Image 1 (tube, rainbow, N blue to C red):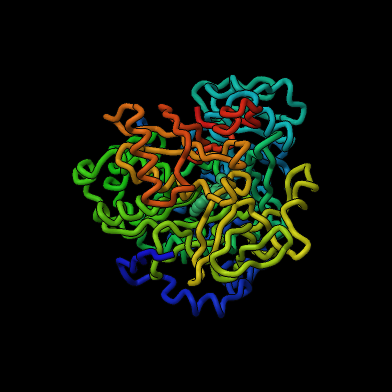
Image 2 (cartoon, protein in one colour; image 1 turned 135 degrees about the horizontal axis):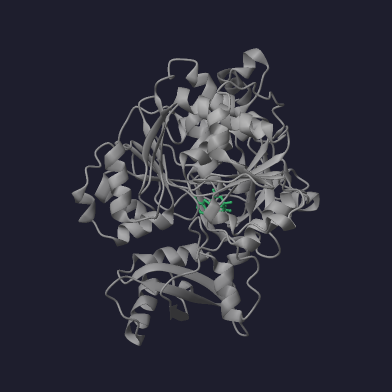
Length: 571
Ligand code: 6R9
């Protein structure tokens, strides 16, 4: 396949020569970057905060927080003190190493203090999206047997406290909280808590964080990560996010999603970066305004957000001073080539796609700032990572063949278990030692990986394998199409036929003529067999809170099947 490659735009990056780094890389050399290499005492929160607070970065701003009501900043020294206090608060509640402490609240400085404090006392933290309803909260607290929950009075209504026998304390962050039964008042306890804390030193293999991720059926599964993941959080933040001391970094993801912890907390702070956290809802004005307000230099977001910004038009971009930006990244879903080209046009920067999963804990395949990128490709494996396309019999496939995207087991941030479900964990690995992602992809002759779809989503129509993403990407190039979700629908003749669900842009009305026009657009731009036979218009497509189009839900609706777990679906 012929694609235009985009050269790097602005120079002087942490990783100058990908190929040389890939060939010589060794994770053990990264260990020397951490203080435990000398002291033998391990705790990720110590490396992320305290180490900087005791050194040159003491008075550097670690956290810029703002939302509609608050506008605050905290230095590394202050972050150390507040997280120490939170650690002491939790210890008063008998939190010990390995206990689960869950946090269910909107983004706020307190979320970060308590999350870091919990890690400092050796607890395993579990961040939950504030939008979760009672069923989703119950499933997660029940399965993890959480001992403490940190939340707000507003959200407490969705926590069935009396039905959760393992939940001993609920720390409430609000005004005039009365301590009664399990309720603990955050503010009064924080005021009294000591700002010095004896950190709980842990083993590198001890539990750090539990992220629940939904399967297509059944209850969500708890993916456990350990402190050792810091090696990869640190090094990927350095080479992929390209963080330097002078950067002001903004990751738009919520900590309820793995991107909001690995790259909203751990990666940036392990590198001592100034981290911007913006609360409240998405709007183009708000987001461009946030970049301008803080002079954001490195910006990490997701395709759904970039598509919405693209949909808002280019005029609005000109109203803001975005000159500080020097590096943009995307994860979570396929990044359409169209969006990359739009980014170059309006920001004069490439948007760098990268691929990873909750289970992998950190980035595995990426585009690097000093490397040529091919728009639409996820890039190349991170140094130290062996990625391949394998068939169902564990054979590695040659270039340009579609198959299972797989990673050789054994990278530092790999999940260590599925909570309460060892069989599920084992099911990810092949006899040959490959971790199978469940994504289908191919690798081109230059070693770039191209996403095709979830394996379950790949469509087989008249003997041709079609990745839904390819079709969706072509669809969103059409001026009328804002978003598209594509599924295979069983068909007696063709095996499956392609059906597209489309949300139109402002100003377009659904009609037969438009359907024909869109269909021939895909036919001529992609392939006749890839053109959707059926097109249905919808105001909105079903998406996860991290912005992924939920094709299995479209399919379930279409075929009248059970939709499976919907707790991660956006309202
Ligand atoms: C970090 C995160 C993982 C799934 C993954 C894949 C999809 C992620 C992608 C991508 C195409 C990319 N995905 N990055 N698809 N291109 N750059 O997203 O974790 O929420 O667990 O989702 O997301 O299908 O398997 P998670």
